[in-house]
Image 1 (tube, helix red, strand yellow):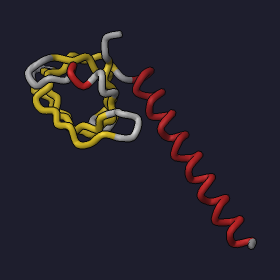
Image 2 (cartoon, rainbow, N blue to C red; image 1 turned 90 degrees about the horizontal axis):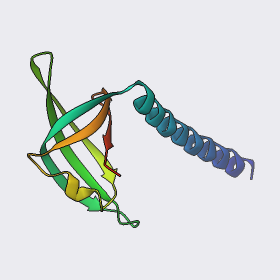
Image 3 (tube, rainbow, N blue to C red; image 1 turned 135 degrees about the vertical axis):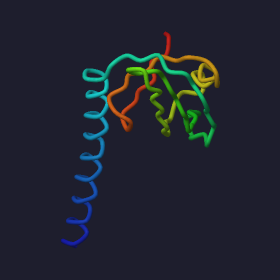
Amino acid sequence: MIIAFVVSAVIAVGFVGYLATLFKRDHDVRWNGRDVRALVEDVRHVGTNDAGSFEITYRLSWQEDGARKTVEGRETISARRFPQLRPGHEIAIRYLDDRNVMFVFDA
């Protein structure tokens, strides 16, 4: 019985910790990231979740200090935002580092 309680507590603490890291990441990108206009080089639909959001992989690039900067990643976005991510078009992003990129969609 005590083992079940300990395992449940560890799972609960792990879940809360994971949520806290997601909120911290979002906060850091919003407040410490910089605005960049990036060219969408490639975007692929990987899957759809139960809420109807799309999981995508992307590759973005932009010019920075005379050099070309490229970022690749995976993100879950709203299905209604997916058409805005077309290869060859520019999109606004908040960039903190290569692992912390946030898309900024028009309202």
